[in-house]
Image (cartoon, rainbow, N blue to C red):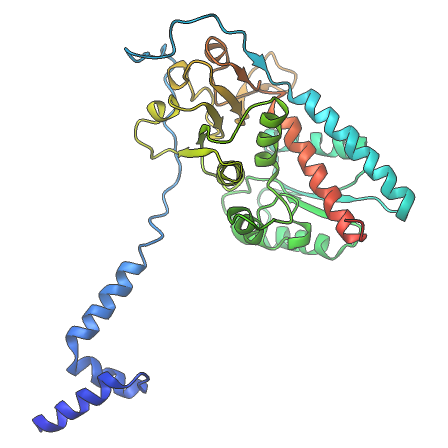
Length: 371
């Protein structure tokens, strides 16, 4: 009997493929190998790490405590440059409109952008209004499908699928965030790769991450950040850049795009230790956390360039719409020591919309064989 088991064990271990019935027998007589294999598989399942939400602590309203040996103090007074996104966006729209006129003359067709809006978030409605207005200005057809917040997810998926099939639509945008009962990943993955003008498709993000490859579309907010820096004459090669926030919309693609420009990039998120200390070392700070006034003066070093992507609605009874948009960076404090900064509103937002129009134009050019 012992000889039989020894012979069987030798054959099972040496055999590359085992029938299911023999697998159980193999595990019975080879417990150590089985336990080692199971342990390996358990450990490999943790490689991607835990899925933790980015929940930022709300910043204190108290004046920031500056480090004792800070480079924030002293030196000549700075005259910071206000990076005017409205002017840059207007220049971009002028160029886009000219190309669309040429396209219409050559083909008799124009680009089309479809927007799916779910719910009645004030900020989302405001963003969509601006996008439709800018589409009209440059000559892009706009299509809007508005759905109630409590609609089933399948209604959103169906709306996207219908736009996928429409040849007059060259770009599809699902306004984020979606209601909590919906799976954003599933909805966004419904968008055709060729119409993913937001640049969120896994293939677009993957190609952005790999040097030497070119995505069909670069995410609009990330593209806007780089456009603002380059048009302002800011050198990126070798610079220390901190990106605050790691969302798929801004933080992740911006960090990838900065690496394409050979910057040294650090990403700060809600679980980072001493985020103020890390950010204070940066030559360039790009903040996209979505937390009003998160970045105080003690987060910034003297002469830094700041791109504030944050646009959080804060109640303001004196405002026309009952709220005002506030950035991640405490603007008044930052003006005391930065060399350049984008305002909120009027900074990154208008250029982001212009990049959406640019991506839609590129999509139409591919569809019409003009690229």
